[in-house]
Every structure is written in C-alpha cells, then in structure tokens.
Length: 153
Image 1 (cartoon, one colour):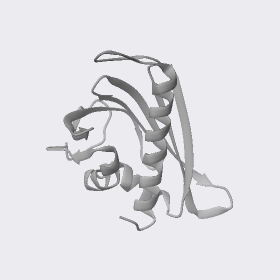
Image 2: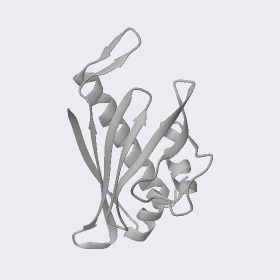
Image 3: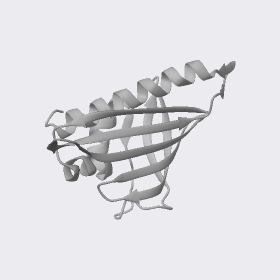
Image 4: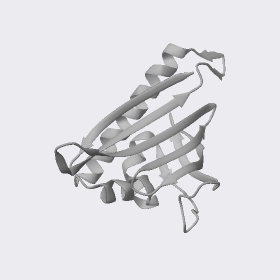
C-alpha cells in the first residue's frame, strides 16, 4: 500500500476551491494536464456518495476511462472517491482546511492511497515506481487546482 499526502496554500476561499473540485467544467479545465478530456454525462447533483461517473482520459496517447465513485462528500470540507484508471486503483481524498493566520486562503490537501504493485503488460509496476507516479500526479493536481483558483488557466 502506498500513501501520498501533499498540500498547498491557495489564495482563494473554500467556496472557490470547492467549486474547482466539484464543477465538471472546472474539473475538466484543471485536470487536462492529467489527460482529462471531460465527462460525456454527469448527474445534475454530482458529486454524491454512491454515484458512478466516467471521465474520458488520454494516457500516453491512448484513450481510456477514469471511473470515479464518490464515497464521502462534505461540502467545502472533504471529497473522497475511489478511482480506477486502467489498472490503477486509487483512493483519493481532498481536504479543504483553513490556512491559520490567512483567512483569505485555503489549505488544500490531497491524500492518495494506491496498491503497492500494479500488473501491466510485460511486468509489474513496483512500489517505488508507484510511489513516484502517485507523488507526481498529486503534485500536478494540486498545482493545477491552485492555478485555476487563483485565476490562471
């Protein structure tokens, strides 16, 4: 089991950060760096525990789906979902926290839990490769959300 937890301070309130995490159009914009091409159809009340959402992705030039199953949704505080992207099985939790001494900022933390070995064609991704992949994804995700919330593209 690999667990990665990183955080970033965002110069935006929790309402703005929550919108970036839950509005499908916002997600497609900031998650484009991870290969997100959008979702063909999402429930009007997304995200809610028990839903099953499919996002179109492109990984290394190959079209695929990211399957998302929200399991904990606490508005402006926490979003936890189980994710499947190809052979990867991930448990992702975003926590929105106050940034002490800076009421205009939000501390966004993402915790990602992944299997320590993933079978792939021709072998296995070991725990060290998995840790590097997971760390890179979390870092890229937090950077993209921060840029989006602070007014960037």
